[in-house]
Length: 136
Image (cartoon, rainbow, N blue to C red; front, side, top):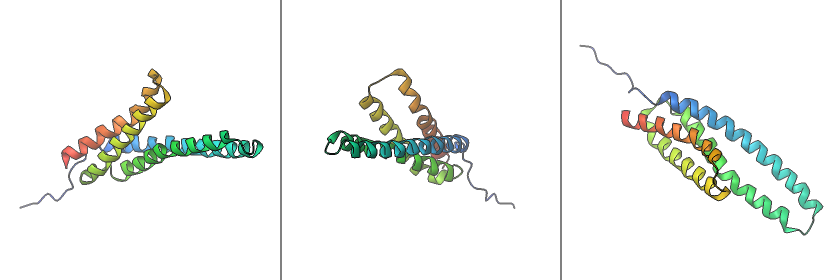
């Protein structure tokens, strides 16, 4: 008698891995651009000493870091857990969190049809996580 000890198949493996890689790439680029913006605002703040404009802009950029950091972490989790259906729950939770943060960002920045493209990767990521969750 032969036993099949193979790990359960992960049907969402491809979606999680590809979207995870793309999320890491795009969020890394966004983080670099935000750091450059903060440095520029720091220089602007020293030029306009005593002005609250640069300080307020810096605080807004710091709040913009949070969704980008969550997207970066979500991408890493997708890459690391793409072939592990038992870890689909954490991917599912982070995928939903990134979608919620993206929708909040779209609403707060004013809705435009082109802003919906920011939902493509998180939604595909979520589909992959759901497929793995169903296989677990």
